[in-house]
Amino acid sequence: MVDNESRRDTLSRRLAIVNERIAEHPLSSEEFTRARAVVAQRTDDGPQAVNAELRAQGLPSLGAQARLIARRAGSLARLNRKRLRLETRIREAERPRS
Image (cartoon, rainbow, N blue to C red; front, side, top):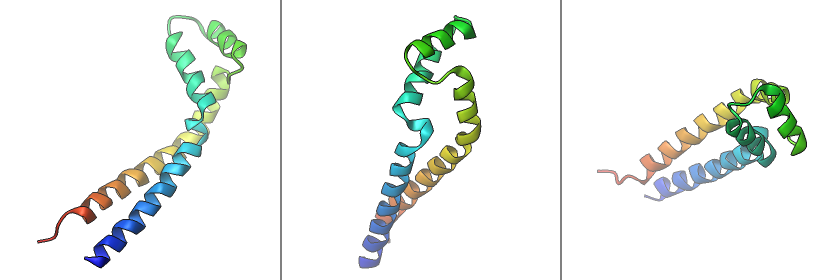
């Protein structure tokens, strides 16, 4: 039982670290999230109008967003997969053993 608690605590600490890294990731930043929201709201507008709105709000342009996504999406995906694996392992550690 103690081993199971210790394992769960270790996994929980690792999960907290992964969650912190996800929160600090550039694609999770408030600025990037706001920029993506502007793009989503302006789907019917052309790229020039969207870029003008982004510029007016001091947010990254469509090109800058695309470059950031291309460079950083893989690392965010890996962190999220790690988070999901840790959450699964924690649930398994919490299950009573028969």
